[in-house]
Image 1 (cartoon, helix red, strand yellow):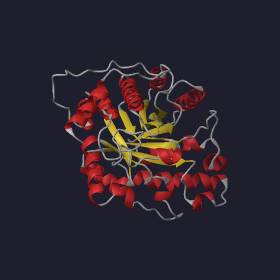
Image 2 (cartoon, one colour):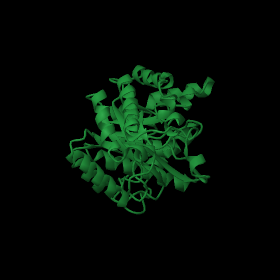
Image 3 (cartoon, one colour):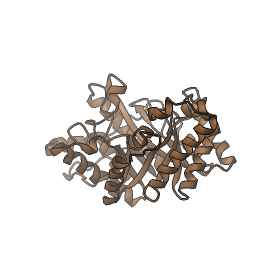
Image 4 (cartoon, one colour):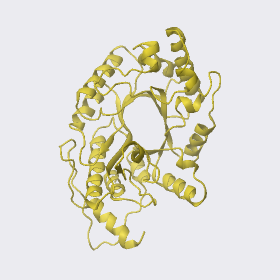
Amino acid sequence: MTRRAFLALTMLAVSACGGSSDGGTAPVTPITPNPTTPAVDTTPLRTYASRRNFYIGAAIDRGFRFTGTEGTTFTNTFTRQFNMLVAENDMKHASLHPAQNTYRFTSADSLVAFADANNMKVRGHVLVFHNQNASWLTSGTWTPAQAKQLMIDHITQVVTHFRGKVMEWDVVNEILADNGTLRAGWYLNNIGADYIADAFRAARAADPTVGLFYNDYNVEGISPKSDSAYKLVADLVAKGVPITGVGFESHFIAGQMPQNVDANMQRFAALGLKVHITELDIRVPTPSTSASLTTQAQNYRDYLAACMRFPACDVAVLWGFTDKESWIPSTFPGFGDALIFDAAYQPKASFFSLQAQLK
């Protein structure tokens, strides 16, 4: 990237631009640099985050294993910018537990070792999920008691293996359907609704200090689904279930941010829970334009600002960091460019907007 292009990106990130059109989060007043100052701030995100006792992270695994120059660029960029790592897929059931009596930790262990070597914390993702379970589990025939024990055994083995190496776990993931009811799936169908509390208790028994989270999408603002999530979590807290917090996945479209994020974070925090941003990306229609990337940058900053207004929100994880390696184009045709580095690992306006907010 030329110096002129780099400066242009910087100006784009901090210029006055439209926030979310629906008032979901209060727009942050952009910081306009002194036009006579030529210096570009090259301070890594993790440096500013650490000064605030904040964790800024990203999910990786496939890109972590890129080879050659691409692999070096990917790893160096990630290491420089982030102080938290999440395994995008390598800690899911199908990856870790390929046969009933077989565990395969090699790939996940390599990520954890890398994080430790680079002074990063690790979020564990995920222990119980309706998707990406090994076929031996989902194709078998089990009694409710057997199914419950299989779940507990998996949680116990995995959490024990990573005890002291993982800061917090997504214990249950996406357990609500879009209408706010409990999502049908192997765990609900074979064990019943009590699987949720049982999963948290098993995780706590395996590690007495690790953070334990319920993680879901479309629960970031006030909505029927987030109302259901709040009632579910409040019930767990009232029953003494060992839950530490709630993860807001935060997969958004630029210009269509959720309503009343602050009020929603406040009500979960009032339960004594952490509220962490766990899978943030903000997609735009492709090909992207200067206008759409400007809106994206402001949305990133406004959403992080909402988090940072609450002591309960001290973690923000992106679901990837470079448009080179993102789930968005294959999952949402016609959309992409959702992350803060472009496909050539150059910082976008959204990078500078996050950097400005973390200062």
